[in-house]
Amino acid sequence: MPDFAAECAEVDHHEQQIAVVNRQDPCDKIVVDTYHVSCQSDKVNFSDQYAGIVLYSKDGATQWKCGGVKCRSGYIYITNSAGLMQQFPNETGMVHGAAYKKLFKESMSGIVGSGFSIQQGKFVFRSWSMNAFSDKYHNEAKEMNDLEKHVVTQALRQWFISGQSNQNHKVSELKQLPRTAAELPGSKQLPPTAAELPGSTASCCIQ
Image 1 (cartoon, rainbow, N blue to C red):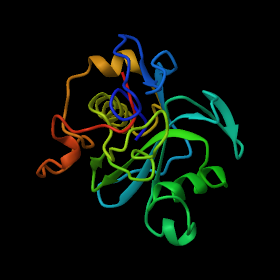
Image 2 (cartoon, helix red, strand yellow):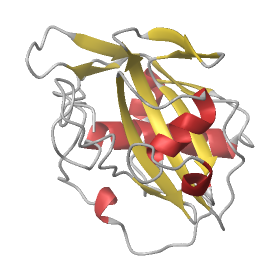
Image 3 (cartoon, rainbow, N blue to C red):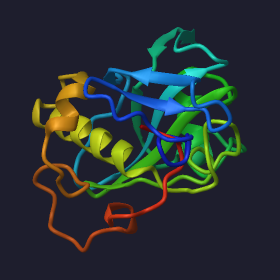
Image 4 (cartoon, rainbow, N blue to C red):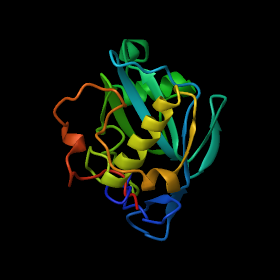
């Protein structure tokens, strides 16, 4: 995944933000102060499975427009994964490339980002196609780094609690929230996935 203080390079532990760090040049950072859950996302329930992507930059830009969709660093998109690969075959990875194609109407390229899934309300923070992508912002680990897992988990939980209507979540507030299980509020208590266990490697280098 992108090197978010782990895979990307490592993430900057600033109070108000996090940063995706270039492993080759630590001064080159993609700074994120807010995570935004796309209004194009599907409504999430506890029965279905979903593919999720977190975008930090495209072609070096931290604010961009693609396929009519405006994005900035920290953009999260979630879509039901049922039939996704059949609808968008031959895209990068199993489902994350297909999810990207569904939203932006083009194949994924020039992206620094991370991938995850939601399976019956539980988050799985791994993606070979996005998290283990080989570039200056990612390492070869398929797991998100621990800090990124935490802030994305809390952003998604707050979004879900709001009735899936509160789209914007400040990093400064997310970082202050206590660590919880990587699942939506109200999920059945199941054994933790590997993505939830402490000490997992990360893809993006996030600080």
